[in-house]
Image 1: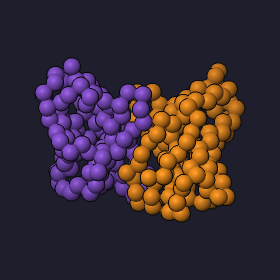
Image 2: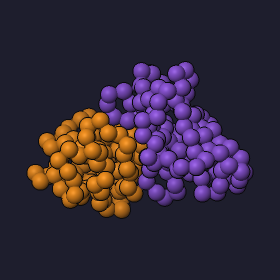
Image 3: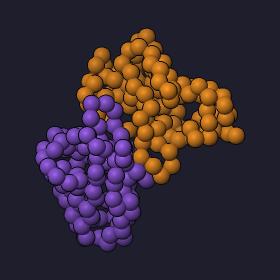
Image 4: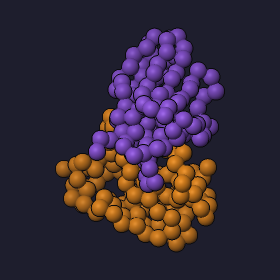
Length: 111
Length: 111
């Protein structure tokens, strides 16, 4: 499976934008990029996913590099509730959900 | 619309006992996934089931672990003769045609 690399941790001030990077240099043409987040003592929560084009939803935006070797999850205005571990995951094909979660990025939000 | 329901939330077993973890998927979801999260680690895929069928069990240990998703009732993850290394959080996820929805997990402690 193609692997992803994320920083172990990041900090953001409340109400500021946050850019969470993810490198996936061995991504294949059919791999989708998924982002999930996990709040303390809870199950993961879907955030966003994409293939080639940038994506926006009510939670976040996903910016995908032209060569697809990296992507960035953008939280437009961080709140305290956004403090979580964010996972960037690749899946082979749109219908594949046997996902491999790495250690993710632990985001701390400072009031 | 109730989310993915897992029980028990916490389970303590002594070495050699059996653990049974239950998962009721979201209404209308026919795909169920089980993941395991060891302390300070990301989630690891274990098994993917549809009603009465195991689709992919490539992440399941070959011995002592089994899973089922009967025609009626919840999906069950069964661990026989538990050992200390089985102590982890076990998450169930379900989906219909979209992304995964996770439960809050069952935390197994083996004494």
